[in-house]
Amino acid sequence: DAGITQSPRYKITETGRQVTLMCHQTWSHSYMFWYRQDLGHGLRLIYYSAAADITDKGEVPDGYVVSRSKTENFPLTLESATRSQTSVYFCASSESGGGNTEAFFGQGTRLTVV
Amino acid sequence: GNSVTQMEGPVTLSEEAFLTINCTYTATGYPSLFWYVQYPGEGLQLLLKATKADDKGSNKGFEATYRKETTSFHLEKGSVQVSDSAVYFCALYPAGNNRKLIWGLGTSLAVNP
Image 1: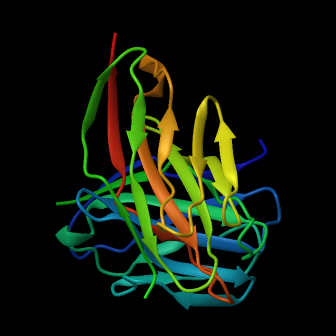
Image 2: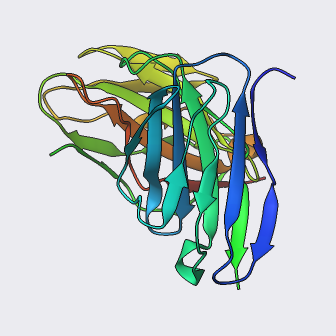
Image 3: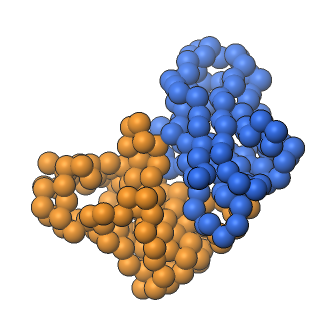
């Protein structure tokens, strides 16, 4: 299927566990992004990537790790999950970083850390 | 720095009412401006955009005009429907080489039949 898909859609994990959220896009977009969405904070950028093997920190990168070995995949890993990382996570992609470029979002992953 | 301020929600309207969601921004130069919509249980999707001053973006009956003089990009719709119930996000792409969207906090809209 064409588009951008995230998996899993829902995840419950325990404090201290490692969790990886997957993101896959079929358009070969250069740019990919990870956001978290929390009430009262809107969308906050965690990490982004301009191309394969190029990643950079966003506003709230602490506690997260990303990689981008292939253009189409951009996994987000929580190395040791904490309750404060309970959130809805969105992956997005865009063709370029230009101002005319639409960002396409996945359906989100609701992560609960207990 | 760059920032986006949206009116706080939730906004509750009756069907066929007029909608305005205010959005103002702070940025240097001429950013591009966007409205994204998030329907319940879904990711965000682009609703409309404007890339230069005085441009009007429009889609699905929604409109927003890029006003440089008031640094605003208010979202309007003349007659809302129940299906418009969603969260609406205003965002800007700064001028220059910064490739990160700057987001407002979102405004929740509930339309009652």
